[in-house]
Length: 372
Figure 1 (tube, one colour):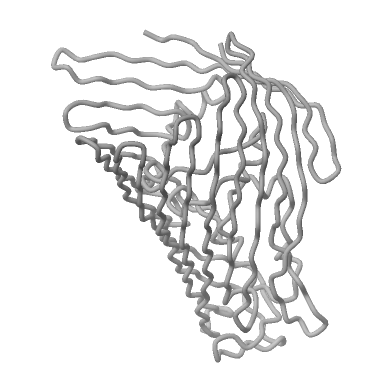
Figure 2 (figure 1 turned 180 degrees about the vertical axis):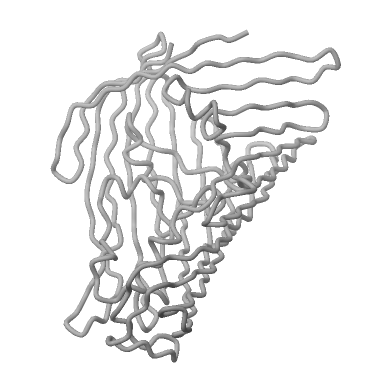
């Protein structure tokens, strides 16, 4: 059986003083069945992802029974499946600015959700005079989860996930575990995720400084470098429902550790060890009054880096959002939201000492969502 469902939206979006009309319509196909032995199976994909669903990069396929549920395809990492995200605002979600990033889902070295980058372009590291800063963009991404296993017993739900076993030359490996426990109106959750990667890059790099006691003078030309890096997350969340009000808090500690080995025409030049931490914590609240739901969230990500400066540099990046939705009935809802977001900003001085600052932008949207 393959039922067909859909969703659509239309409205106005304004981001960083640019206002546009926006609309979208999507169709989702879902199939399911049951074996003679009682095992349930099925899958789903959106029409726009038909090609990706065919090769396993989009959509999901699952089987479930007394052993739990195992899903392949475009699935969440186990820690994300357990701890989740804060409530979003706006009819488009406004770039998922309510979210934190999970390493096992394809990480970002800044600890920020990837969609923020689409709203506000981050600094171009390749245009700086010190190419070791390319590390933050080279390692970002990684292997997203491909298999998610879920098992529930009473009030406890366990999740485990792994990324694709073979990822080409990048050699990304990701895995995660998570658990949540329900106690009446309170849900507590915790998760751990890791993304390991090794890769080599060819190309002429020059202009290195002294880093971790290894001197790479500006006259040195480096034509290749290899990176070995680990990104790990430890995340916890708590959700409490008080009648028509839902509170959720979340905390995550992200650590990036990388070792970069440089060569020139096959001759060893030097090795640098780099690190970056991103601590994110936030709170969201939703309150429903008949057809009206009000939502607010706030997130702070504290970056402390050993990559973008020769001494530790700490910066707090804040994100706030307010939103409202009104149920019009029949599968239609009117929504509006506004966010204020701070993103990393690269500061370069005359002597090429680079540090992390921050810049900010505002965005809002208003429109109607439909489901059918």
